Image 1 (spheres, rainbow, N blue to C red):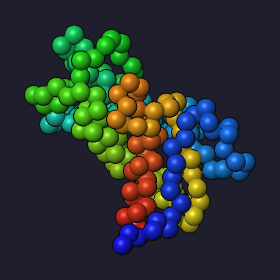
Image 2 (tube, rainbow, N blue to C red):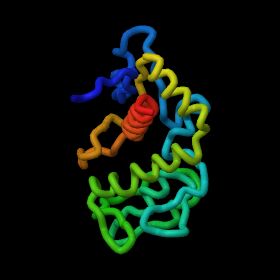
Image 3 (cartoon, rainbow, N blue to C red):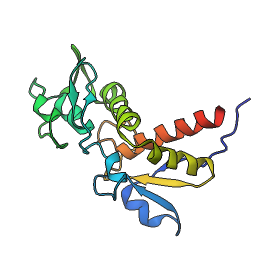
Image 4 (cartoon, rainbow, N blue to C red):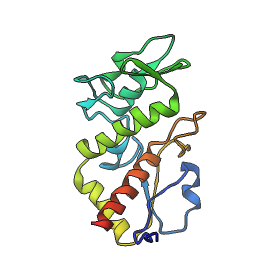
Length: 181
């Protein structure tokens, strides 16, 4: 027998659909263009000390730095992206470096991007911010999250993954864990 969810699930919304939400909806911009403290949810935000999966003891300043720095373009990674503000890297990647392996984009999202982003949430974002989201959800308040991306499906390798979708999955999992405890 499955247990019904009692909290208001957080929802990823395409940025161009935000204006179509009902009036009074709680909408959170998780992009680097957002107001503080929500701008800090962006993978571009410089937090520092973010561990790089597959590279023990090496850190990056941003989640985006991990993602871009581990991209394999013309057979090479670009560790310079580990330092400074997050930036996009030009060129067609053949995959992402993960230790001694090269991963395709879907596996790289699962083994690199999502764990790195979640590490950042747990270790660099104020617990009060995350608790505010989960408290609201557990109180029945629907919340809609967006960033500058429109792809919420980590298995869609044709478009960049929106980090707000990763944030929503994380928050819904944390709500379910709190509800179960």
